[in-house]
Image (cartoon, rainbow, N blue to C red; front, top):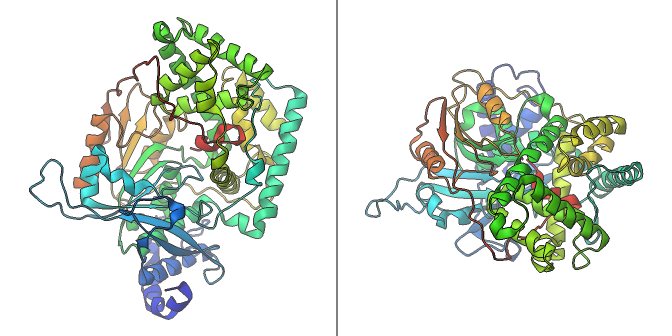
Amino acid sequence: MRAAALYSAAGSLLLTTLAAAPADSAPGLSGRPGGPGSAEFRGSVLAAARAEAAGIRFGECPAAEELPDSVRCGTVTVPLDYAHPDGKQIKLTVSRTEATGKNPRDPEHRVERQGALVYNPGGPGASGMFFPMIGVIPEWKRIAGAYDLVGYAPRGVARSAPLSCKDPKRFFKGPTQAPVHPSESYKRERVAEAKAYARGCAERSGDALRHYHSLNNARDLDVLRAALGEDRLTFMGASYGTYFGALYATLFPSHVRRMVFDSVVNPDPGQIWYRNNLDQSTAFESRWADFRAWAARHDDVYGLGATPQAVLRSYEKAAARLAAEPAGGKVGPGQLQGAFLQAGYYDDYWPHRAHALSAYLKGDPQPLIDQAAPITEAAVEAENGNAVYTAVECNDASWPTSWQVWDRDNTRLARTAPFETWDNVWMNLPCAYWPAPRQTPLDVRTGPGDLPPVLILAAERDAATPYAGALELRRRLPGSALVTERGAGTHGIAGGPNQCVNDYLDAYLLAGRLPGRSAECAPHPEPRPAARVDRSHRVHEGHGGKAARGA
């Protein structure tokens, strides 16, 4: 049933909900952007009431989703503009598997269903449609026994009113350069590209572009909650998902049942998003050093050098060679950097990347081509993800509009953090020339007792979302608990190889138990070196490799 047909049915629900609206939001929000009394807040209440009345008709997933028969799909309707909830509507795609009722530790007894667990993998620009499939993995089976696993594609992503800023056929570039100290002429070229990309976003999306931002993602989440028939939301957000999840907790604290924030974006309004990206570049330098130290410890396997500095020289040698003669005609220094940027996210990539670099320097370029060459078949998905990333971050907050500011700050930063700094600039620079209006970042915070206790997970050396963000979110959400994986840097640690982390996750989601204000886990084991590895760890990102780098 479409939203228009639900208007009368939703009317009585709307009156009840509006009467209680101030209790559904954090104290101090009244009069602030998006808070009670605002047109957007009233629109979100109306949209949620309509969605609750309509529900979601789950059925066979479209072939385009590439999901197994065990996963069911549907859509939920949300306003493009919450200030005008009777205006244009868009549909978000949703996927679900029902709770199995099984406990792998006690197969003789059924597990009581606890509702829906909604997941967002981050980005901005990533789809969670594949999330329900995770229930077959051993680390997730207990959670899958108690919860319907629900994924969705946020607005702009995949089939959810998709955004595009550039012809996908022209999106992937390869080979490209990646100078750590770019020349003035190179900078001028990239500035021109950033301006053209921002124009392309506006030309392809028109006035709708302004409505793709984090506050609307939080409002969409509440509409999804209502459509699922959940009085209160159980949500897990990873990376960027922690940011709009924190906005949700601030806007709708009484709608929260349980929330897990995994690898936390620093929610301080002053950090969104320019300064968060500066901090990210600094953190990636440290994580790049971690990889080089690991490769040096395994010089007997890879032959890249017995010290981190020697490994760096091997990498620079490869980059120089690729600049002169790209591998396979597709892999230049930009693709090399993009591949090793992924190693900064996930240490299980380390053996793959070290093997590829070693083989290339010894005369075999194929492993590097396999791992780093752009996959043209993924161009549409990659361009879409990049467009959403750009639109959300540019719309969310003010950015410096003077190139001189970007140049000054990042020239200074590149002296100590050369690995990622300029690539990060080129990815975000369209925000300096953004044509759409900017949002004012919401001051994430709740009062004592306003929000149910939530669980925060963080790896101490995470580069994509530096650890300071987890500390800041814990400070802003009284009653929250932080579990830290010490000495580790993998981005996204829930349901991963660390059983200590997983035990805290299970205790919270299954029984509501938290470890107090904080707890620590020893790091998961480092990856084992391998002389030969499979070729499955591919780079799917374009535009400098940044599609994975969202928070």
